[in-house]
Length: 496
Figure 1 (cartoon, rainbow, N blue to C red):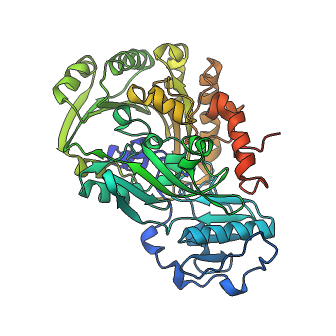
Figure 2 (tube, rainbow, N blue to C red; figure 1 turned 90 degrees about the vertical axis):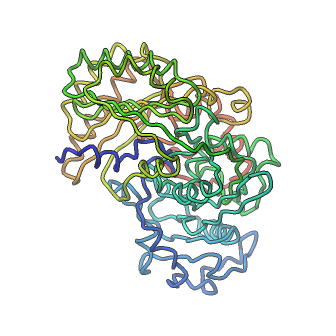
């Protein structure tokens, strides 16, 4: 199995800062620059589509609103593909939507034919939840409009990717606290929470929302801010379970001009040294300010610690000095923020991988008893990566908590397990090791998980992702998707 160089490794994972799924962190698998000509592929002739006369509402649409692709159509595979090459699902139809009206039409098609419906924006779902077999995929990749509103608010359509959004926002010296991986879609990222370099200062991505245009399972359009329960649910619990979020309006923040990053490398570690450095990193990161971020990334016997700030770089340097004393090598960069973010855009796919949340931690004590065992598993398994990122600070804001269903705000560290490989023949061994590490972490009582990093094998996933909020989300699902049209493994179930 290939051992990735530092440059290749950073390109693959984008330092796992994006989020998303529909989200989630890695890059979109399709080349969206090639898919902007969807209207040239006729697909299902709208006038000859399956009869929708028995649907509650009929929608008069053109190919400027939606193209419905069948399996034999030339563009079908281009719009089907996801970032994860490990997963290959085959919908009956793909509705490539360009307008909200097109989304309504697609929903009516799903109703008429009795199809399960999933929603794809960036295609980054770790477990392929944005697609299905023999159902309908609503593909939002062509909905990319970005419109500025008064008061430095910005409306972003659901198919927009982070690199496109950052290009637009940075040109106006503004930002939202989103992820860093360029080809992640804004929809899945935001609906599952969303975090990145700036979240300790400004909160999760969903905390900057002021409005969401939302189409429910009956094809009705809602402005979510007018329904307190729906708006609450879409901030951390809305990943394709209730309907389709088509437009997001965000409050933006003034963009800092500079971005300071400090990278420390620790090579040829053994389990005892790993234990010591991990303990020190937890102690150090607890002292970081809201302007700071840190990621702890173990790949084989090499550890990389990235620390960044949009604040006082000298203060950050003083904070991490004890880690520097332990490092094998270190280097810093201090460049304009817009240029710096491009370094973390990550690689385009598809690639073979298995990624998942590996638990949220309060402190080193949560994993102290298994830290050395985790190291041994990763150190002896090429392709396996263990990462911890800092949350905390203003993510744990009482107002944000009250206004969103994201349930883990009081837990300041998020871990992720990643496995990368080059061919399906390598999959079984790595996935077995992956589960062994997950079992170690579960064995010490870690149950909270980040919804944007799903794992099909999580026991009690309902509580792991949503905590005590799951039953409330079920009631909201039952209100807005009464026929359970939107379904995928680990979608929110109807309330019983």
